[in-house]
Image (cartoon, rainbow over all chains, first blue to last red; front, side, top):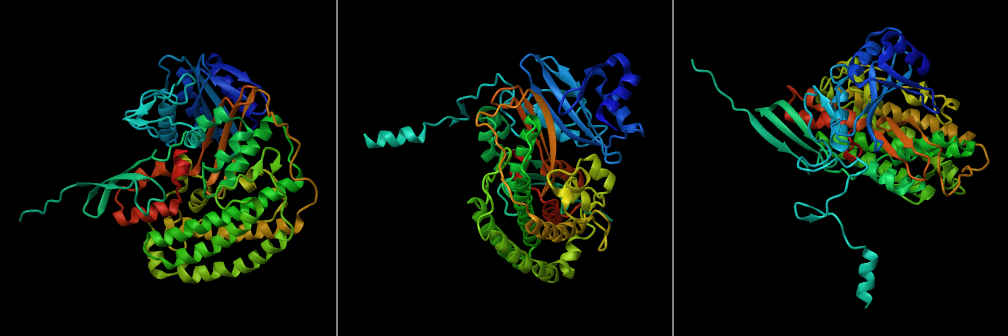
Length: 169
Length: 372
């Protein structure tokens, strides 16, 4: 099924809760009300016409005025892809977890929590995954400023070229 | 009669353990030799590659993609190239696509050789590792002649490849393939059908097909579970539709479908398929340019796209958001090892500690690809 047809099908079923269907090139996408993302995904998973059996990718994007979580869904049976998005406020972004539908969401949501700072409600193990546990801030936020040191280890260094010059003098 | 009491132990494995394939750590809760659970702790190799992409621009990011997965860097190169080409609607010249396929398939063989070699070493057989690495060295020599590097290639560019095949390279590559085909049979009789080896791997870490899809396993790990799925065949990209090759899947001859032995065997069979593709590509390569004209100050139109490449560790997804400037707004790489690591905690329940090593090796996880 073409992605746009899938979005139409979701729109038929959920009406107002589908906020936007964007027919954009190269990949069209569909914006869903954050409150109903689990319901929509469960519908796409169970419906035999779509039967989305894999959450292929989940990423968080910081757009400076909002945070978006992007879901790339894929069906091995019908070989079609769908892209869903939810738009969240930048202050305390929070959305329900999809872990109970697709297990692969567990780690990907931990990564988004770690790097973009989205809270996933109902997640079984929401801890930092790539950064150290005591790290402050979320590095993939656009306003993130790297601290100058971490536990006494400097994160900046003098340019080696400048150092070479100093040796000559 | 009083019963014997055992105490649960908490063991630490890694981060610098010879068999964890890079810097990985496990916290193991074990009752004697049997694990209750192994909890993976990743992130030791996090180099914030996705953040770097936002700072260095489209052309400048190409060498960094090598570091996403340095064991099969051709595929990460190709993934980044394809994502940018899709955003800016650039068509790669046919000879360029053939060069990409040739380089990538050689890289796939090299990566699988390392995977099956270290697999033998992880469960205690050292000789197969040396055999596999000997062959891998020759591929590295070929690739070095092609692009000047043996590990982090930086061979591809947005719109094609950096250099054409050097003079005489095609004949050398074909001669190597003639030499390599019988080596695989030798490797099989040396280790693959060895009874001790089979006993160590069969029925260990069984992943049913449904669970593999639910956990988003990809590539040889997914095919080991009996799912006939290969991006090269099912969602074709580049010039793969031109070639005739099979997609091997796990049959469960030695145990259950989806056990470690199946995943190992899929890799061995895939090398044979890669040889087939390479023979066809090297004989049919058309003439012409290898690189499309792409402006230096590359600014794709605003938009976003996702592409999928079948890397040696399976379906690798690149999600790129462009805002119309010379720097990508956001890049996200979804890799096969990341998904495979997420499954280990569940699979480890009830396994012996020694089998954990075999399980990690059979999933072919590469630490830099998890942490990026």
